[in-house]
Length: 214
Ligand SMILES: NC(=O)C1=CN([C@@H]2O[C@H](COP(=O)(O)OP(=O)(O)OC[C@H]3O[C@@H](n4cnc5c(N)ncnc54)[C@H](O)[C@@H]3O)[C@@H](O)[C@H]2O)[C@H](O)CC1
Ligand SMILES: [K+]
Image 1 (cartoon, rainbow, N blue to C red):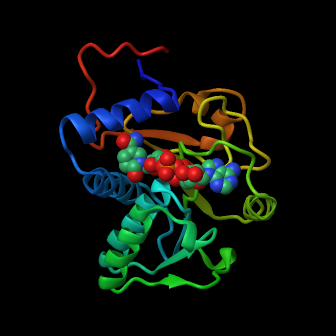
Image 2: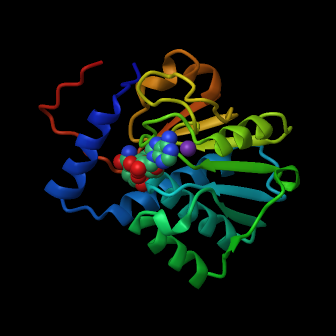
């Protein structure tokens, strides 16, 4: 039986892993990237040109790390930031520096139609408001293009706790849940937008005494 969690529970387990066991956040980000890389490798996706859409939080950091790994595999990868990079978390800037050292630089503007596979690394469990107008338009437009979307952790626009569409959401062919799947992926529209749900262990530790609410 798959254990689903709330975002609060996920944050508690992340903090437990990083603070009680001193496992660095970068390790979790790298393991998240490797997990998604494994799902891509095990699938039958068209990898001719991969577009990674990158947000400003840790979901974006996961996406940049994944883009670097795919680039190092020799695949054609474009990184496109969604939002003002100046407002991005330190984890995003750190992953961007590493990616640049590995020869992967962000693209200015990518044509979604040229991508054979889109990686959704815009929002994950940190989504707490309706998407900004411009992003809602982008998601709706992207949903009309016939290419596969792989969502990291949650489809952008889906409320990770309620499964509601927050203005608009990007429909995924596959969602790779990190650690535990979020309860929003099996409620309301979340089930429809997440596509095939793959749960991957990325080393998030759980106390024996932890009482799941679900
Ligand atoms: N499960 C794990 O152990 C790990 C998960 N990781 C990844 O981290 C994200 C969650 O990261 P977080 O920075 O908390 O949030 P997001 O990246 O989802 O969101 C970015 C940022 O955006 C702001 N925000 C939220 N809603 C809006 C909005 N409507 N408009 C504008 N801005 C908004 C908010 O401040 C957020 O912080 C998780 O999904 C995983 O992908 C770790 O990388 C590895 C360990
Ligand atoms: K996402």
